[in-house]
Structure formats: structure tokens, C-alpha cells
Image (cartoon, rainbow, N blue to C red; front, side, top):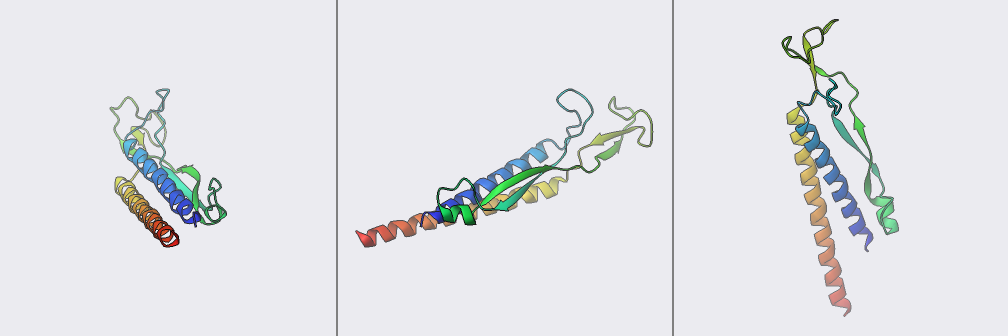
Length: 142
């Protein structure tokens, strides 16, 4: 009976991670420098889920929960913005005068964040309903 709480809790944890990643992507949508000060645009992250929850206390939670399998980093090309006056503009070659920027779509990230928020709320409602049903069952037994 406690497995259902493990399942909904694992869903909330996974969706919280997804929301954190969407927020990080939005926060870094204009970050073109890495921590060393070199031109290296931020790369969007994506959360990958997998079935099961290895950290669950119950067998049901381990079998039917969800967990974050990995957080992938987008390896695609950056978005180039023409700005030859920028000190970060490429000096020669095909992209001369262009500044590389993160290829992050703010609308997509906001949608991912809202979807994660709604899924989190749904899991929280399941956990609350489960607690209520367990309390009712204990009242019937006593």
C-alpha cells in the first residue's frame, strides 16, 4: 500500500528536476562565455526519464516509479547572430562577424516548465488522495 506513495513521490522528484532544467535553460539563454571567459555558448539541457525508481523503499515503488536517467546536453550547432562590432565575433572563416549564442527557444522552455509543474501537481494530488484513503482504511480497522 505504501508503494503508491513511492510512485507519486518519484514522479514529483523527476518533475522538479525537469522544472529546474527548464529554468536553467531560460536563465542561460544569452550566456555565450564559459566559466573561463572563453566564447562557448551554453548548451540546452534535456531531462531523460526511465521507468522504475531504484531508490524506492517498496517493491511497487521500484517497479512502477520513475527516475531521471540522465540529463542530455544539446550537441547541435549554436545560433549565430551577426554583430561584427562585438569583441566575441568570429574573426575569420564562414561565420566571420557572427557571434555564437545558445540555441534556446524560450517559448519551448516555458512550455516544458508548465508541463512539469502540472505533472508535479498531479503527482501531489495522487499522494494526498493516497494519504486520505490510508487514513480512512485505518479508521475502519480501528
